[in-house]
Length: 301
Image (cartoon, rainbow, N blue to C red; front, side, top):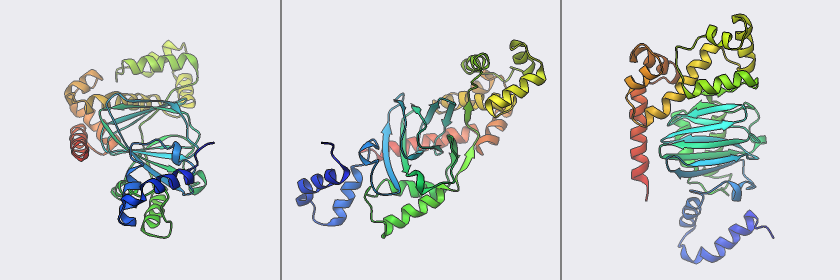
């Protein structure tokens, strides 16, 4: 017979309650139990939000899967790459990713990733997009997520924990998207060309060159490209270059090397594009990652 959440909780309490002197200590240890755990044992908890914390090593992969709940990923450190049937998304450090319920996705970690995940019942928030998005995480939301993973999954909705989770839910509705999704066309020939570009991204590729490869006029090509991806060719090319740059930046590759490899005339041009997308320069992003990774490492037991 399948072990339900309530029977699981009862078993844990029965076996361990004698070890605790008071309810507060019990709740703190219960909260720690959802660290480094999958959502599966808690998916049916009768609460609108469930928050989990996990630590992943560089190169860790999660095979394609889906959730009945929506998911907000947040990483204190490292880069997270999520792949869906519609494309690839790159989540830099201290940013987030919205994944709607039912979306099949796989995950790859670049660098050591200190991950926090908030799982949301679909009916708890109905104004969110129906596709994956990389999102900005405000200082308030960052603090709420950090607090949420230390709250028991079966929290009291009428106490401080319930108020905190309610505020977190309100803040989710204020998420601002970042231009870090990279749609892959369904058109076979165009998809193959895009995949080739991702293996060797460069700002030197032009609309005319791609149109010629597709045996199309410039106008017909640009129209089809936007219909297939939702982006202009120039915007898609820029985002593809950002996708290529972020993992190398986090790995410590010099900004100048990345800029030249991507075809920028000088690091300043690359920095301008990068700062326009993220609000931070590449060097600021690298320093931010280094600080987050150091803090995450020092916090480990």
